[in-house]
Length: 217
Image (cartoon, rainbow, N blue to C red; front, side, top):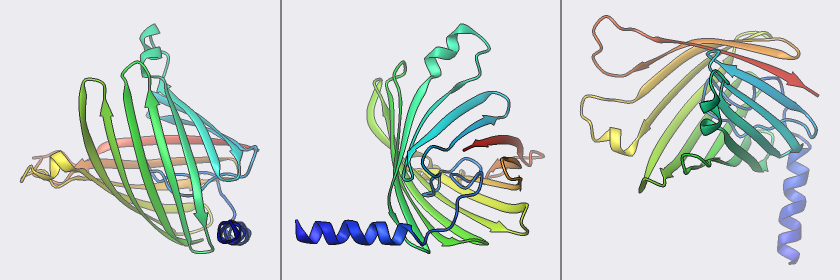
């Protein structure tokens, strides 16, 4: 018990020196980071005008959110998912968080962990996640790598790479590469980018990606 108390005190002390959260820091383009909002804050994100997400920080290390397809038809309820991110370590240069997502209608469960390194102008992120649903008991594992480079106070350059255990077996497919920029204000951020498979794709270059995040505190 004594050792556990000392460990918890160290975690609290480390958190006091963590970088201040800025709108959008909780993820890159799509990849979650280990960073969290202050207690009581929340954000609303719209992806491609098609998917929406509302998340609230119930503590300074705990996010709880709801994600779904935009309500174009009544079938959107089948895509409603509940997600949780729990940051369990934070120091001036390192943070780590566990995250999970559950979609009841599809019986889809996703579990993941991400480690974020660096602070302020340069950050690097490593993540791994597993997913399975009621129709397929075998787990599919995803591997995520990303970086964010702050070019100025308002502009951040973002890059992500992702792959999965089943797709790694495909000799032609080398994963997905995402590149983009974040334009950040005090309460809103916009991300414009592109996503492409790392394989021969003819004249195709990038699938366009647009995201807007509104921050409330």
